[in-house]
Image 1 (spheres, one colour):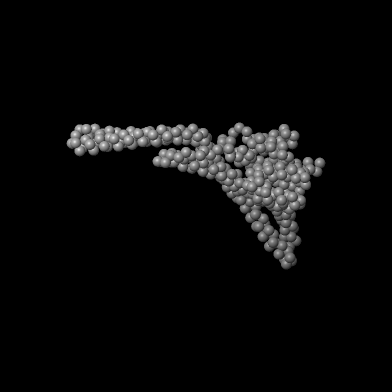
Image 2 (cartoon, rainbow over the protein chains, first blue to last red; image 1 turned 120 degrees about the vertical axis):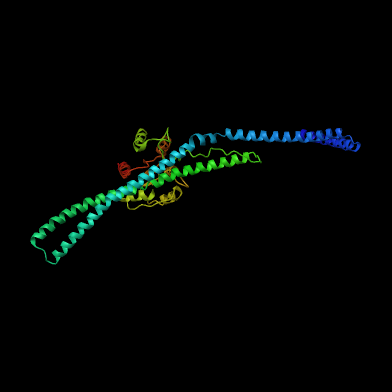
Length: 250
Length: 113
């Protein structure tokens, strides 16, 4: 209300000065006319100052609100460095998984090769035996080779199974790194939102932004423990979990 | 991860297994009544493992079904919550084939006892 009143007063004043300016010009009083012009532009200046002042205040308030948003501080102080740490851990895990898999394959291949070569050699001798082209001496050596082969086959297939299980277990990295990367993607989305806010604040149109509450954070699923990032109440491996469970009567 | 566990279970002699995407799909399968044992993650879309566990315990027909949780979630409060909800075993990822076997054997020993 008071603003409108001020405006109308301003308008009346301006009209008055303008009429005075015309009167001075008609009368040829140049000095007085210049004064009237200065007064009229003074109105303009004071309104401009008021407008600039209002915008400055709004900008100031917005920036203050932006800085006071604790989410920003969280992101800058801990979540960004954490994200880097998490991604480093992803690199470590994928590297370990690749090395485990390659190692297992490298040690499994000679086992499979040995099985193939031995069975090939024995198959040849077996053919000779079936064709009755084998001496008693040769048969004795075939017989002892066969018993060695059967033993080897057993131990080699056990070793192969163990190596394949290693490869199988190594694939667990996909699940764990997936969970970690998803968290970083969420953070990047969050940062993007804040940057959009920042652009909005620094842009010409300052609008009051509705603040999103941070209560949606899921405390139930925290994802895999990243060494050096997750501290406090997370347990360190299966042994600790077992200890806790046994203390709970398990 | 489901494929890994399925393969490990097969290696341990459990050849008759079925998979579900999350708690919402697992629960009706369990209620069909042909399962002796449940292995579940915590972090799943739709219905989380902890909620599946609670739903299983709340169901009169499933209340005594052995449940093993295999998950990356290793906060103290989570393990306590799972224990209170009636989990029979808790394996944290990353785990070894030996750990899984040990926990499963333990559960079946207890069930038999």
